[in-house]
Image (cartoon, rainbow, N blue to C red; front, side, top):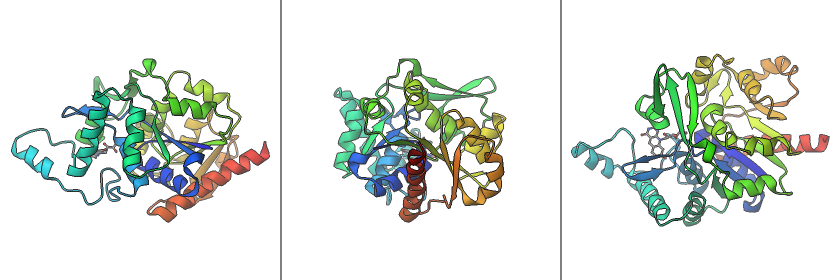
Length: 315
Ligand code: FO1
């Protein structure tokens, strides 16, 4: 069994590739919920939805979030009423948030609600929230703290990030399936998807006790670089690295993950960095990691799984 840690668009793509190669009993995808927030009275879980829609094959491939072929009547009506329209909720997507909120209000956990939504969308693989407790990523720019979606969507990632916190993390427990997977004898490896290390992967790793649990595991941990040729495929990862004085390339990512990972999948355009990686005790492989379609996703997932297998064979 493989555990994938995912968040955002890059996470959804690799998770989908893994789901093409592994059966539902062979893969658990644990997803960041630090981006979750309440909006218009609804519980929005952007990363869970990005992964769920992608595996259901109904995702909007242009934006990376939301549904394909979406209509926007709700937003247009909201605009006429002068309501908040900064966060775009398509008509079909809105149904997901309404149903999630209805089930949560009825007392179900986010894990149970996610399993129900996945089942209804025909997703057989296990997509689980990192935690059933509320955790909210907040970012500080100068002397102001912003909620994640305010920073990401309303402010278009423009403020320079100086500090990141995960509000409520001290009370968060790993979701039951995430914990069970980490404690399972069947676990063969962990794949860290090419998601933003600071706001997608760190919230998962920051759950109290989780890092200690991972550190004592004997299985290989492999990350796929979200930075390709000195550029973030999508989102503010590279900008954040510069703002946090980290080397703004794949080396910076590897250094950030250094104590955690055994293997690193980089894009072949970064092969000139190979010599620098010799100083790390991390096995690196270079592959074409651009994921435009399902075949690309399968190829990158295959490279990550091969690296897990190679590292296991070496032990
Ligand atoms: N991202 C945007 O840049 N603008 C939006 O209006 C927006 C709406 C939205 C609605 C539902 C949803 O699940 C995701 C949405 N996202 C939007 C994406 C979201 O902010 C990001 O995917 C993540 O939080 C970062 O991983």
